[in-house]
Length: 101
Image (cartoon, rainbow, N blue to C red; front, top):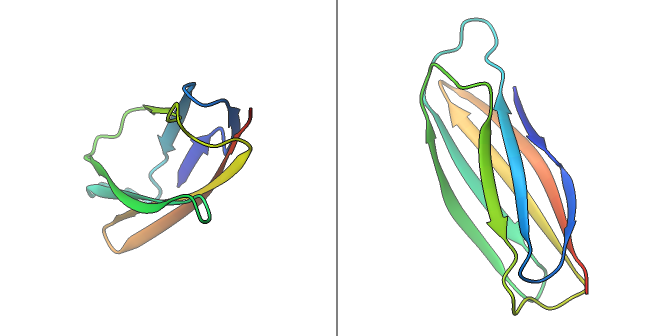
């Protein structure tokens, strides 16, 4: 099971946002997990990022810091989809970042 905290966040241009990803293996799962992040900020920006590979044994959590670009327009809603895939299993978590003035 893939969990990301926070699923929704607010930040201003230039601010960092700290995310915590938690992998909870089920039924003895112990395969490498590939992460991909798809980002959609409407007409402003769209992109896909290789977010790395996690190998077992899994840590209790993984910390990720995202810095909102200083030139980002505000207000803006950025939607993200974090996909984790490995061992024939796929999990998806929806994320939202509200960029505020």
